[in-house]
Length: 519
Image (tube, rainbow, N blue to C red; front, side):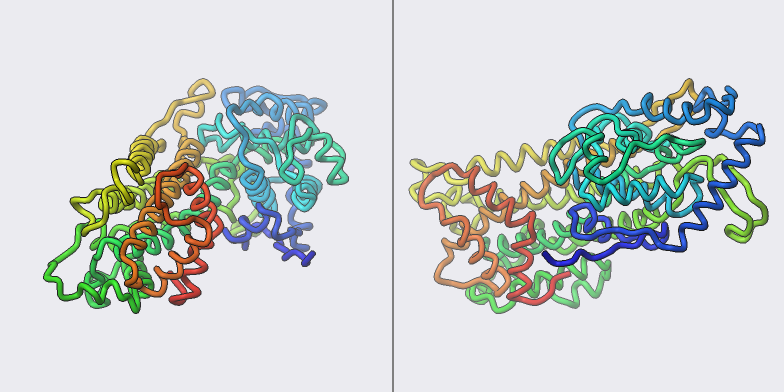
């Protein structure tokens, strides 16, 4: 077995790609040596202030509406334990283990920033659990996104306490067994540590990160699959000319047009009808760079938001030491960095942007299966149509998914329901945005898979003319796994196989091997 890469946590330099690697067990993690002193100094400040008797939120007071309730010194640890068990009330199916691992990694990284005031032991245990292949059992629903993702993060903290369930190497087990597997024992929380574990945006940010990385690949796949459809529909590449996009240089649009030119290079199909007299293609073909590119640009914005968030301190209150950010004095300050609004807005934008990839994809599917639009292709791409229905209902499935996406794209971030007796009177609903965006992304991949199946079936009807190098390579790879449909069969199996080819980047890899690196 090859040695894993190492990701060093310091609270400042984590990347989105690091998160993916750790989530799937491809990288181990360690704590940067320089974190130790910072963590200990912040902890010492918390301990000193806790012993001073001065009321400080989350250390010796209740929480939320109960923030004015003082807590005696001998009950400070119990206060933190009670916080975790009372807040771990999420519902619905748990996050998949990679998403839950991303969540735990992000919480570890924000603790490494050094503004939370927890003991180094807390961070060390999170890292040890991750390196042992463990993941918390985190129900995906139950957060309003301020004061952070309280319920999801409380389920992470339960694992440290040895309570509830967990995953080890993807298999569900008890938290106690997961701790034992990692060589750990349950911890007893000290002052502020429960709050330090659950105040923050790491649940929505984890789902956002994993969804964004998949969505970025879907943008490239949209160009690949769209190029296949354009060839099959006898479209033209003239609208992708460099000067057209130089005249309106949105970065994503320029990148998408460049991809399409590469994929269609050396196409016999395009050459065969270049003088046919057809003036221009429908928008779903001609405007691929403009539509796909706009989604790319939206995802770039989401990436920038997440890159800031994953290396931020989102706890409350925050522990500051003399000299932090140029300010003097040690201080614990109550603020609002737990509020998920930046992530919620970005996630709603992500969902809308990715959904458009499916909207335009489904329109190309309709052209491929509709004999009045398909430039001579048989109805529903079926031989002996009538006896065979061909891909008739694949388009219906795509339409169903498009409909669901339109509902899911209603922004959650425009809603706010006050909680905690109106103390928390504005919330982000960012976790709802995250869950919706992930469902949209999955639906988009299904729709694009349907388009890829239809385009490859249609390309066979254009034989012996050969498509461009990139399209030809994709068609060949698909045919290695999914044969031409001479007659009706259970097409769901073909859809599942195509899903695999898209999800594991096979189609992108073969396209790039043939035509060069894609944006």
